[in-house]
Amino acid sequence: MNSTITTIEYDSFMALTIGLVVFFLGAFLTRRVAFLRNYNIPEPVSGGMAIALLTWAAYEWFHVQVTFDLTVRDSLLVIFFATIGLNARFADLLVGGKLLIRLLILTVLFIAVQNAIGLLGVQLFDLPNPVAVLLGSASLIGGHGTAIAWGPTIESQTGFAAAEEIGIATATLGLVFAALIGGPIAKFLIDKNKLKADDDSHLIVGIPFQKDGEPKEEQVVNHINIMRVLLTSHIAVILGWFVQQGLESVDLKLPLFVTTMLMAIVMSNSVPYIFPSIQWPARTRSMAIVSDYCLSIFLALSLMSMQLWTLVSLGGPLISVLMLQIIAASAFILLIVFKFMGSNYTSAVLSAGFAGFALGATPTAIANMSSVTKRYGAAPLALIILPLVSAFFVDLVNALIIKFFVGL
Image (cartoon, rainbow, N blue to C red):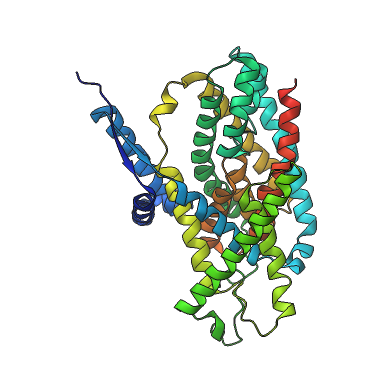
């Protein structure tokens, strides 16, 4: 039997094109499959998982390996966080200040829990102790970027050759389960407690309407308004890049999407007041379209590019520890996060988001919350405070806790 692997590589442009098709495949599956629809599984997750399973089948049965150039995916992530920052207002942040602090405290606590479970896992399977963070917060809350950053360090420190592979595999599977459990958790909390959104569920989050229910004139979607969103987003990216370079000069590393989001927040809370005649695009329909496009295609690319066959060889230890992490995350959310964040509709939406970034990544968290709010109604505060915690504060805190556990 011929076992030679044939590799099919798609460049960045084709990957983007396929990602768009995958999103609509997910939308079709969500409409047709009751489970996906009822449990708020995001469309790009449904489509991306379907393609990942197909490429796995192609690898196993026909010895064909499909790979995608994901350069454009990372660019979409940066633009997405620019739109999140542009929609943030200091007044909202002040209103949600207490919730933000509570969410940060819970996140720090759960980072420690994740690494404790990872430490238990390496003890059970006789792995080097520093590998615990690769089965914990470095790969789950930290995501692929943190796992890739710490993998070589732990490999050189312990001599454990599979360190980076375990980190990437944990991050990959975590992303899948993050997208699968967030919606069901929110549905359970909302249905059990008979919760309802404070805002009219038919309104688009953050978009002001006139008294007659019609959108304001600047809310009309046309090519000028779309281009205005793209212009301000890219200006935020440019400013974020300069900030990132400045921080690196003093040996402080932050991802570009974090510095971009921070600069977008500064822009949206200064430019409209300094230049009131400017038609600022924040919280408009055009902004929502650009934001949703970037998030949806980012997730579609992330899920469809998973090479599931690489996870099979890691088998027992990885799956066992990950199951413990999923159980711990679900219990933590249901018993602690929901109650500590207020036991209301906003906290139910935040619970879906917490599942998204605790096991996956911030875009997964946003997708989970967006999927829930599309069905049950708006929760604007949740969509504002969670990215600030998960995309900014967590990176700083996680790095300190990872260093502590690696040093054990």
